[in-house]
Image (cartoon, rainbow, N blue to C red):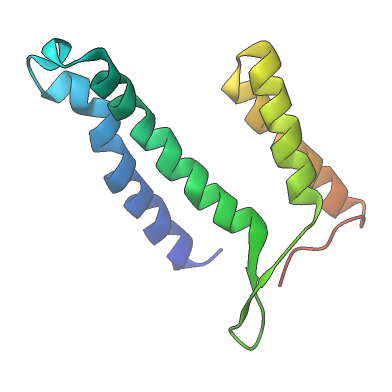
Length: 114
């Protein structure tokens, strides 16, 4: 694990937490139009989804050139989406996705992207 991942986690927290805590930090937020309120609630998940999409689809090789990647991670993302859509349980979807990737890599069916 590199320290870049810790920096990324802190950056993700700094970007997404204020949008999620906006309701607690801003009095009178309930007076906003419903469409604006719905938009603000979806900013945090949208940022996280964008970061996850880049992590799944783009791999930087040894020569520092990014390339498109299709692997077991795509299967895990689709399983996660299906579980969340069907069961309305994000935690179960994420645990399933992590398990799929971990088991595939442990079994040698998928390599860690370089």
